[in-house]
Image 1 (cartoon, rainbow, N blue to C red):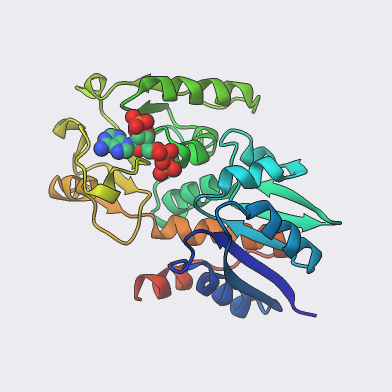
Image 2 (image 1 turned 120 degrees about the vertical axis):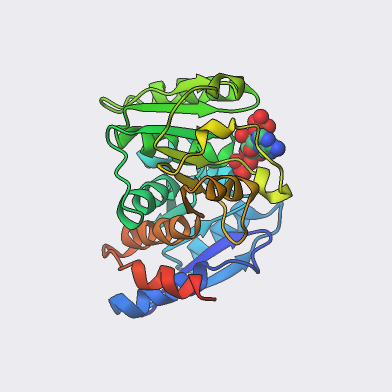
Length: 274
Ligand code: ATR
């Protein structure tokens, strides 16, 4: 019997997840269906309960339901603890287990696809909102030499620091909090934009000196060239958008559900060519 999966969001029409999972299923010969479902803004948990009752095996969760997915889960995987948000639910015996695969998606894209190992490197992450919280622990676990997080409101970085300390993972690198002014004179190997500033084409107040030809400048957004990417590109930096992360987080979810890891390279190329 075909196992049923879906992605839940609102809006959801733009989602590339059904196409990505269809490619994974074809490649690995898994008998699954995967559809996009628009959940009402006030009806996320009812929708999840209905899908569980209908025998679905799991769902991906996107904006704005990742926090609700975490709140309603019966089991929380370590990957979802710091963000307190989940993009992947696994259904079993009428219950839901919450995972967050965004961090692994980002780190795999940077380390494997872009060939930039983070171990011993100086990493700067810009932003401390939901997207940044989703990936912070995986960056810290990759063991960079330093992990600086900058945000307009530094209190949010302090919150993230506390959550990371509270996660009690062994030997992970602590976050250093910074203001934008505090970045002057600092040097990094990898700079990750986890803010939503690109949505409004806002220019981030990052000193020009950060952008050099040696860095990888990674914007977690995809589908548009953000001012951050333009600034980095004009300095000769290696520049990447978040499309690889999108496919890698999906691959991790697929692997949690199906126990088999798909080859992401051809899928990234297919989605990129659309
Ligand atoms: P998301 O889920 O996309 O992370 P969010 O939780 O609202 O959305 O977080 C948005 C992030 O982008 C925050 O880090 C925000 O900074 P503040 O916490 O200081 O508001 C950051 N951000 C958005 N627009 C920005 C801009 N124009 N300049 C700098 N940071 C910006």
